[in-house]
Length: 174
Image 1 (cartoon, helix red, strand yellow):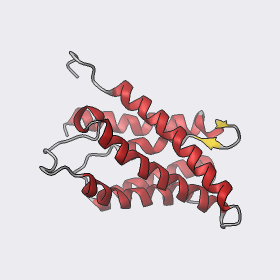
Image 2 (cartoon, rainbow, N blue to C red):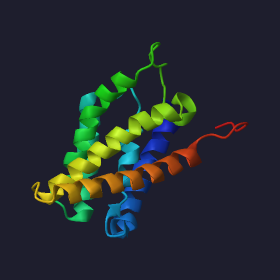
Image 3 (cartoon, helix red, strand yellow):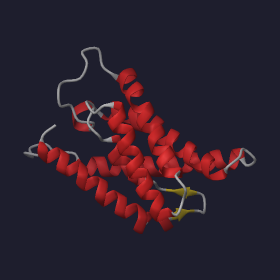
């Protein structure tokens, strides 16, 4: 991954983090579905980054979101969990020939099928962890699971739109 890609990823962390805490924090569809788009840059971190660096990044980014949400580590815990699980999922999804050096997580390089197989479980796990930690118990299990599912779908749709917009178009030099 070259320097401009790291700068683009850093800008994504900042932009989507600010979007999350300013606009999306108060956007709830039907009092049931929230969008946590701030996790997208975490999921786009290059494949070659170590597990420890992933979890440290997840913690720092999650705790910064917690600061604005006034939550005691809920986002940090959920972000660290998906960063912990990410390398295992990537190993499961690794094609027979492996990945080329510098492969980026994008539909342009890996295809939409791979991207969906990668995003869906990690977004769902993040949201399940987030909502169940927030609930504090299993007393409203089905309601909490429903919120996690609907919010996962909302986040996935917004993530796919962002990935599509960022995808280089045919004939472009990006």
